[in-house]
Amino acid sequence: MPAAPPFPVADPLGEALHVLRMDGVFYCRSELGEPWGMTLPATPGCLWFHVVTSGGCRLTVESGDGGRGTEHVLRPGELALVPHGAGHVLRHAPDAFAPDIRSIPHSMLDGRYALLRHGGDGPVTRMVCGAVRFGHPAARELVERLPGLIRVEPSPRGDRVQDTLRLIAAEIEDGRPGSEAVITRLADVLVIQAVRDRLEQDADARTGWLGALADERIGHALAAVHRAPERAWTVATLAATAAMSRSAFAARFTDLVGEPAMTYVTRWRMHAAVDVLSGGDATVAEVAYRFGYRSEAAFARAFVRVVGEPAGRVRRRAAGRGPAGLEAFATPG
Image (cartoon, rainbow, N blue to C red):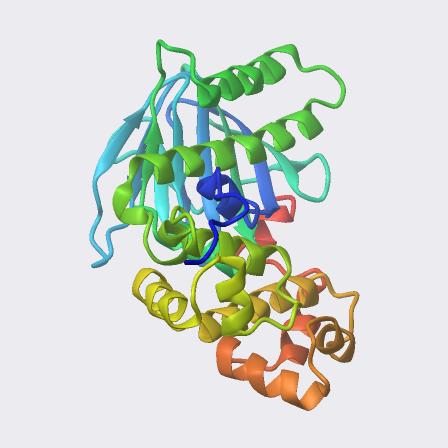
């Protein structure tokens, strides 16, 4: 009988969250006097977040069928995530005029951080909003499992998300030098915390490789692949890592993950290659060698088969590229 694995994956979700490395595309601190409203267009590939630090607003996320969607009231201390980049509207009251945010004048404090003062002379709502994207394809798979809107309401038990929200509110209130840098970093932490909490609470989201990480044996093999995708993995070496027979491992892996082990290894390896190529520094040949391919041509074929486009195109697109529609956000109005 095979020996037990050296250790189980003690924190499967933590293992998965290693791929949630974010690239902040746009951050905005807003001071909004009633009457006010603004429309944020659909930005595929981005996760939007909105933090109300004082005042309040109404958030409407476009429905999948093009309808108006459901309106949600956000109050101080609340966080809303729009994970799939759907178009949405923020405003102080139902049916308030809400122009496209790209048409509203704003001041850029640096290349990605804006200060937006908008609306009338009425009561003021203060918010921090932003758009982030996830470079690793597996991270995008995680985000796709989330619902179209996530709300995190104030909690009397003072959980970590609320602690981070309070820190953001304090930075806005104090206005100390460097507050923009602190707010953007806290916002990134806030998004990860909210995604983690949602995945912990939603059993339906923990499917495929994310759910399989919790299996003592298969999770151990998955973690090994994630940590060293460049290794020359085979079903036999993965089975040994999981302390299982080859046939038992192959059957259990496919059952839990939903695809054969070597198909998964190749796909994860290409995910990692996308991550490296998106940095823009390594050549396709260097990436091919790094991930164990003897020829650039063999790597290129595998890459196209898994990713759906040539590796060179991914590399060329990487430098300075923002998701469609976001470039104008970083242009002063």
